[in-house]
Image 1: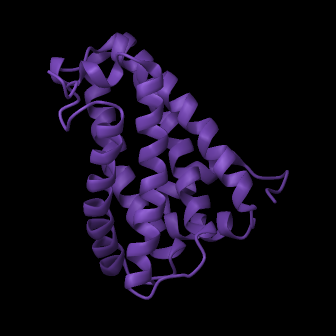
Image 2: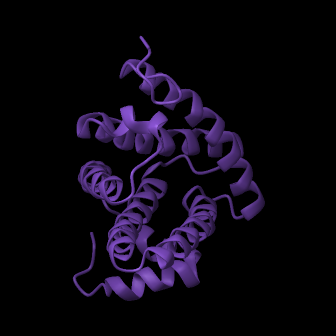
Length: 198
């Protein structure tokens, strides 16, 4: 389980500077998979709340209004997207000889989502105080997310190769796009977020 002595701000900085060593530390905690899924559900709820606040501060394009008009719809997309991400990456990783255990990857992605929720909060505040700075912050978060994501995939799936991690990310992304399209269809939305009966 998670040690009581964890320095969370330091771990967050370590994740940016040396994501592979941060990943090794998180994986060593051996958090049970049911606990990780519960944490993922909680983070999805918080992320939905933060996204709703963000959309109030900075309105989204009209084509995407249907996606955010209902918090429940947003939650289903966020939670379903995370579930698809974990499974798509895991099975894509298996095709490249990756780990047979999903728990490590799940733990790392839960931590990454936690950091992203924190970043969302900072971005919302920055939008209110210094809108120009918020644009640069969004760019930084996007680049940092890709950097951490690729390294976490490499370590979490025991690929030991950033190149293979990128290939897994591409393959998983294709699988996720199909899965997300199915989720949108079940929610009565098409790929643009517009109700399918329109």
